[in-house]
Image 1: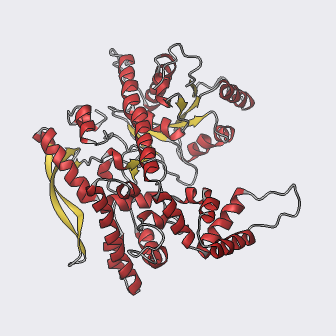
Image 2 (image 1 turned 60 degrees about the vertical axis):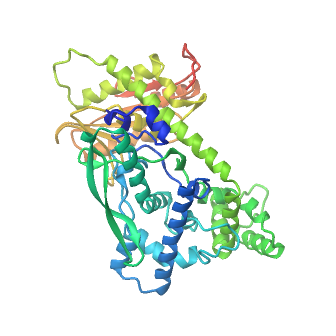
Image 3 (image 1 turned 30 degrees about the vertical axis):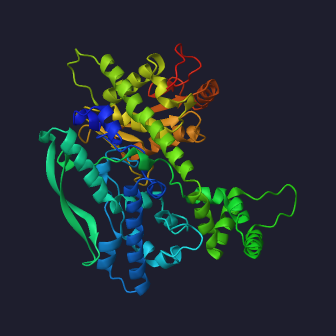
Length: 491
């Protein structure tokens, strides 16, 4: 049983009617809560959540401005664990994450007055936004914003899930949990616990999240988008003197071009933009104002993102797993080691993708979803019932590998996934798994390469020939093309 609906015996249509996403209970799915969608919503409950986030930011700013926050207070007010029970984010192995630790606490407590100089009294944007902390190149990223948002609206998620659970889930699957850090008591200046009756899986509770506050990849307000719209934002500033000062300073930060052949690189341009933003932080407010005016764009992007993830990781994977079950050998009696089991799983994937229309899983409205992490996650989801440990490997100083499949210390196999279009494919085939094996004696490896075009296939064959790996049976190519499949159907 992979999904919430499977485990708790709830119809997908009931979940859809409630507005909740059907999460996986094996590994996180690549979605997260975007606080802008709370601000941009017409639902009073979401607008109230956004106001509560700002109320807490005001509290933090006031404490930061005092200049004497103790380490204990930083831990109590700025540090939060990841809310793993949502099963959202991007962890290709399970649902654990780092959360908001001392680095985040120290950074935010120092920079609060700089990030939010007019918090609660904005003159340019309609209001302030939590995402603003990720625009100043101070080490606060989208993961931090996501974790912070989820923690600040945790009581809503708990209440939302409890209401669904009591109405639709058998009581044998429910348990009462005393949850830590649920709401903030401004009189006591501390986070308070609260009890909830929640769905229970493997000794922990599970949280549902509404689909209309979810997105993937980036928040609607994000630093990459701000840099890409830098010129547009600056040109929209109504104060002509300020526009001129910004433009002059920006030009002064760019390297001099002394010949027609010389070009300013994107890196140099980005560095000049960042320097200009630090010199004129009001640009950030004008950027936010521009994003606020396009609430409908944020909602449309969110809807498209959720539909894509659902198409690939819920509907598509469900069909893929059904096909894998049909291909399973019911008469198998001899247990396989990690290499045989991994190779069998990879070959099943290859067969289903190439022969059973499984390629559709990588397409949304005829457009291929070319992401290595998607293939990794699909592979992990297919280990829905196994006695093997299937873990995503972290970088141990010798290089990371996508998965380590093992049973005990002496039986382990490394599985690596790559797209044929990856510019580092040749280098990876030469070094990565080989180097990693040096730190894991006795490990065997499998390399899986997914391709979407004939050109990609020809490129892979050329690389394998150059490396004398053409006949290497541990390298498995998977054909995800649409143009050579009989059905030609769309997802």
